[in-house]
Image: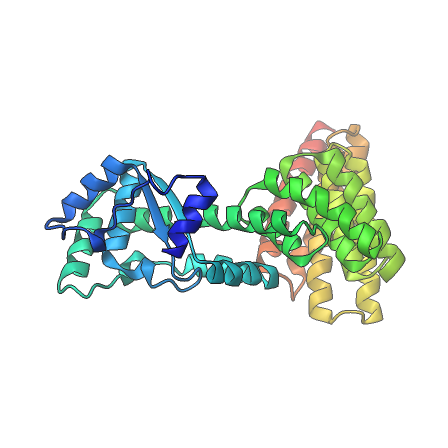
Length: 366
């Protein structure tokens, strides 16, 4: 009842003129099909969750059956919890939003139960016969829960008003993980200056926020914005950790990638060369273990070779052949190197074959 009151307050609805059809309190439904008729007629379903992460409600057969018909009818679905569960949810997002994702992924309508004998099996059979079956039912529930999670988390951030806090940081990451890049970017735009004001431009958390902001811009195709932000991250990490620290080099690799995407191929090549040199020095110094250093160095060499191939397309024949020969040597070395990821080795093999074909075509022209 408390959850229903909160729903009415949040929606600005008048309790005197708003009515709820609750199956448990109404005349028993004799046929499963009758639930579908009711859902279609009302066209708005309210799900009251007892828990955000391990809900008994989502395991009740009749609840899942109503949710399936909500999806089938294209009806609205709203979700509400009591204040204690809301607080638990916000705390979970603040501590680690990955646990929220994991809880959503664990939902499976096939785990439904019912105290009424035979009801769970009957409803499962009905769902399985419907278009999309279990897969559609699961997808709908998870999709709508994800939307609710984001909305509730954003509301919590707005209520706190602390853009430098961990909650805002994690909610931005949650938005990014769920593919809402525009909303994630809008939040990072507020988080970055708030973090900088609180901790300073080169604080680890400020640099992390800038890095995430750059990644979102990169994903959106805002090459200029991403490049400028990556550059600030590289400068900050260089000042704090040094130019050859693995974290600095990973950020510099991101900078190289966005330069390549923006058409600054020669700039990307220069950056990738610096990354390769940095990882080589990092391996020799023992800053990271040999296996990790070699894996990172291999990826950097593959990126460099790919960038050189891209650069060769804008060169005269003789210079292009020299560039391709350098890329060929990098690819060839990678195909023979032990201790790297299989994906990297396969990509190097493909690059080698393409280089060999391109070089052969140049020789034929001569």
